[in-house]
Image (cartoon, rainbow, N blue to C red; front, top):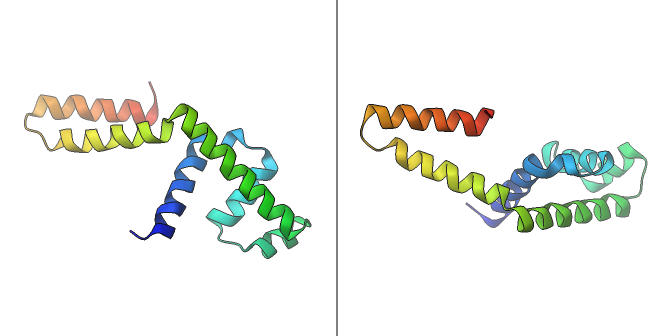
Length: 111
């Protein structure tokens, strides 16, 4: 996987986990840039703000998302748990697999 794709995936993971902690304006700009793949100029035009304001908002948002992850490690935890579940699913034994499926359901859907 190339570095740009890894960076994009990282931002999407961070945004999925912590995005609601951004302001509504920051969320909108992040969605426009990362989800809808709009350029800075397109976002600026749509929101009637400067291109610099869009760029600054993206930088501020990314810094906040990175800070949250460095303090809470929730994305890293999700990735580790998912990888562990995938390994355990390959293990033998129907009871083990049933328990792991239940664990996965709880982690995905909540209690």
